[in-house]
Image (cartoon, rainbow, N blue to C red):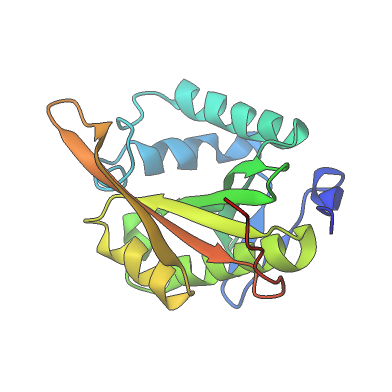
Length: 193
């Protein structure tokens, strides 16, 4: 089966019980800057905190350009009732040849502990497997990120790799775990050696 690339014709709009996942808009720049300038948000993401609103504008332009080039599909996560931007979730990369994508996201600390990331990731997985027809979705996380690990395990991801000293964190190196979930609607292919 081929990938269904309709999501690159019209940007998908996803709804969960409490969230709306939509395309990033230029007007999201101040909220994105406020989110990514907080050191707590970047604790388990290999990047420095944002230092200016111009960086947020550039990220939004890059995210939308990557979608136009069929390289990724990232969503602004907003509260369904108010429309308030609270984070992001989506496919950071899409490997069309291998029908594989990497999922990732972030959430404003004011909304931690409410189960919202589980809702967002579940909706993005459903899009990836049921509509785009991906064969597998992976997540790369720092092993100490217990929240992300809990979400992945709850959704059926399995750790397939562990890289020691994989990420340079400025003063030391950190490990990275790779977790994968296969499309439950596909049969598993066995490759010959």
